[in-house]
Image (cartoon, rainbow, N blue to C red; front, side):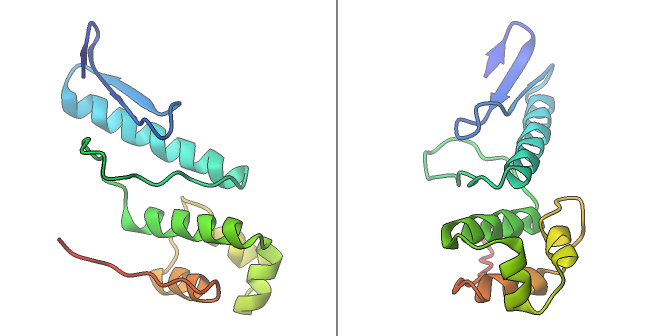
Length: 128
């Protein structure tokens, strides 16, 4: 959306995530960065992350590894289990689980898929 300072991009599901820029693209990139920073807060505070809906609005692209991690966080919170319990179910250390939930740590998608599986979830990738 144009504004007096250029463009403003915002995320209705995460009100604190917005970006300003001189161009539409720079505002979207700033909003993307704010969304990722908000995700880190959600992870640190163990809060559910709202998922997008089919509202017809524009979407920002989030890396599939980040999306997989946020889906895992939401599943863990829905099941009400601790990181320690997840570690026990997977046969991993609590430190390894902490790394899975670190957005800056590269986690193999297979690891996230296994973690989702112990929560009776499947990770399916659809290419459009």
